[in-house]
Amino acid sequence: MKMKTRFVLEKLTIPLPNGTQAIFWLDGNGKITVGNGTFEKPAPNAFSLVQVEDCPFATPICKSVCYVHRLEEAEQEVHHAYRENSRAIREILKYPAHQCAAQQALAAWIRTHCKYGFRWHVSGDIFSLQYARFIANVCNQAPHVLFWIYTRSFAYTEPLLEAPNLIVNLSADEDNLEKAYAYHRKYGFRICYMTVSGALPNDLPEGSVIFPSHELRGRDLSDPKQAPWWQSLTHHQRKMVCPPDFFGQSEKRRCGPCKKCLK
Image 1: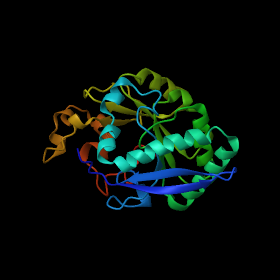
Image 2: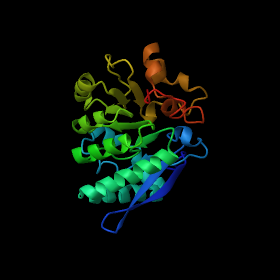
Image 3: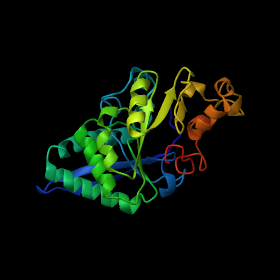
Image 4: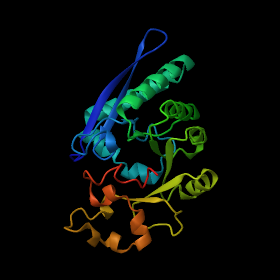
């Protein structure tokens, strides 16, 4: 299946204290490029890992519908970069001096190239507390940049509180919703709820965002609002739905113009 969204990559070479180098690949696509580029010409503004393998708290539902499986088939170069990042970050985390060098280099690159926003993980997730601290440190070294993340690694989110410019979105579905509620109550993180069946909880907190699976989107209709799932929603629920996911992506329907997950 051919992916419609355009992906871009940029190589970041990081000199390490022992005289060697590490390589990070920064990726981007038309949906998430925010003000750093356009929908047609996106700019890299994300750091990604491998789906499932780098998602220690992946649920059965998210594994079954993960969009990165399609990306792996259609964008092999991009997915190879994700795998290289997975290897590189684990090697860096073994040595405190390497961590400092990588944090400084990545933050400097972000300050220059991603003034309008940077996303952690188009693919992958937080795989350890140590990595969560790495993320928070990078955010703190680029204090004027807005960062955002979607995560099912709720147990690793506490270090992220140290970065006031990082928006934390809890990725939830039927399998982990109760845990998401608990962390929302504890820390105030937003819940981003993915529905595959079309069913929705009645008590999603104010500010939550709803992500419908592909089967629920009325993309084959002249007017997506005629889709049965959309017709079943209340007015309040419709306001919570991710517009790029349901209606299709465009210059106006992408992260940045849409701020549901970025407030």
